[in-house]
Length: 250
Ligand SMILES: Nc1nc2c(c(=O)[nH]1)N[C@H]1C(S)=C(S)[C@@H](COP(=O)(O)O)O[C@H]1N2
Ligand SMILES: [Mo]
Image (tube, rainbow, N blue to C red; front, side, top):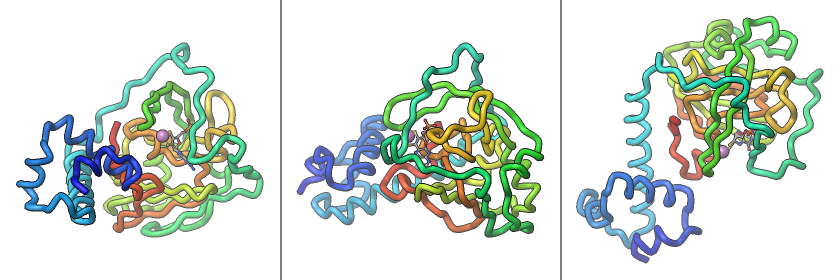
């Protein structure tokens, strides 16, 4: 099958194909030019996928290089908050995990000195910070919300994380998983959020703990976090491993 047919057929590796198609259009890189650049037989699906994945990895590196650790995402007034704030997950709202905050513990592992788990009570003893920012979902909607919690840098310093390591990975109670580059993990607006608005996170927005990262697209904001780890091996993610660009700055 030709590449243009593959690009039109949304069931063949759909996410990566759709994403990279947008990339082609934006950068007006024609399919012919791609064929010439790569010397790749565009009828060979596996070879084409390899090229697209390589382009996406290259795109990660360029975005990481462009990332300014001091540049803040826009913040908003309380009156700008979207009501009701949308729910989104890879399942319907009825399947949101039912987590007992009393039993819950955050597991910590990898390149950190202190691997002791964290209860909600203990997380609340750390300094807290609040933000009103815009959440942007790759599916084409955005909404403004207010989240509060522990600045992630404070948390990483507190557990003695190796801040020169490359990645922080997250495992969630609903089998979702994701990961961040260390520069974004240390950004001043990246927080381990315990509250939505004035109250503890409700189940649909990620009780008991979610990572709020206003410099990334929504899918890089894991909810219902159960464990996190510091590593030099890219842990990937639920959507990232299906072809969504890993870096996905917003
Ligand atoms: N654990 C978990 N986290 C997740 C998801 C999910 O399905 N499970 N979906 C992601 C996506 S695609 C979006 S847009 C946001 C939605 O967050 P919200 O429900 O607070 O709007 O959560 C992100 N984090
Ligand atoms: Mo999303």
